[in-house]
Image 1 (cartoon, rainbow, N blue to C red):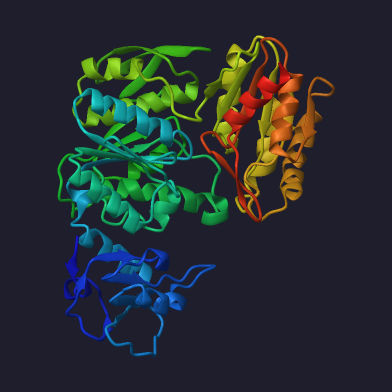
Image 2: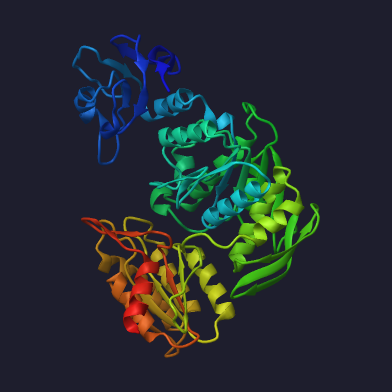
Length: 500
């Protein structure tokens, strides 16, 4: 894929060009390590790294043009310098054009919310594939294009990577792209150039306040997806917002969009409602009732949180005209998503569940589900990530005490923070909640995550449930000075094997 530099320049307002605009651009990147001959190198100014410091490096690797927002006094033969007010804003203009606006060629379904995004994307993908469509997926765990599975760095990739992925989906004949849309991506406009056809709102609970600063800003970021659905500049038809009315922020999303709406819920009147819900250890059954007809379901996934995820997925499918005769078998054959209430089976006489729950609401959801079918004690191993919202740490401590019998707080991904300091914040909430339960519960603080998991497994007795929460599908742990291999599921299996 290549473009004339002059055409890229014409997209940008208030631009100053030094050097020849008569060049062919073969690629665009903001990472100097990924520069190849014929590239346009975009100099982004970040908190830790300034791309302007890597212009010479990019030129040496074959860049023929650079996009800057700071003065670059040098004149280098063969290098065109394009100066704009904001390189990030310019990148968001250039990237969709460079990749031929793939977001206008696919049907795009975006799922946003604090919890449930990943499972909902996989459920929607399964329904669409059952209907005979070719479906790409972009999410927290992986990116899938046909048979190709790619690793991910962010829940929603940066704008260049995202447009490149969507272009690959177009090339490989995908009909749909189903993607998780994070609040960061919406606030930072990583989804520039994506024309969403369906937006699904799952829920909003406390998370990412380190980035958004307050809850109102967090809600506002999510609402951007639904405002975009009613844009008069849309090039595609049939836009639908699928909204959970049981969540307090559902009304805000409802008021943020001008397009058609399909509402869902359990407690509040909605177009899609779950009735006669039965949650068991090995699945859940319920009936979907409402203006779109009745759909009885017997699922292999469990938990009230998954009832909501299924409702959201059905809403997206209905929006796209999928018949319930296709929806029902697709959902009933769905088994699991890696790291989402995933059972670890290694021949042990107790249940071990690994889940990605890393917010107070997420932890509450999975613990309540475990409690519903627990025949004995519930043990929880959990932590909180470093360099993230500190205010949720004591809340998660309180949540763990409320639902579990034995609480083991440990490291998650401490990043640059001292793990002991993170756990002190968690322990504040634990101690406060423990005062209400006396000696009926116990807790431990174990910094080393492997030792914490081992401690829980040694305590476990027949028919206990151990929930290992926070990292789910992740196969690593981010420490201050390095990232190590760490998979909660594999660690649990290893320890169970050693205990035999």
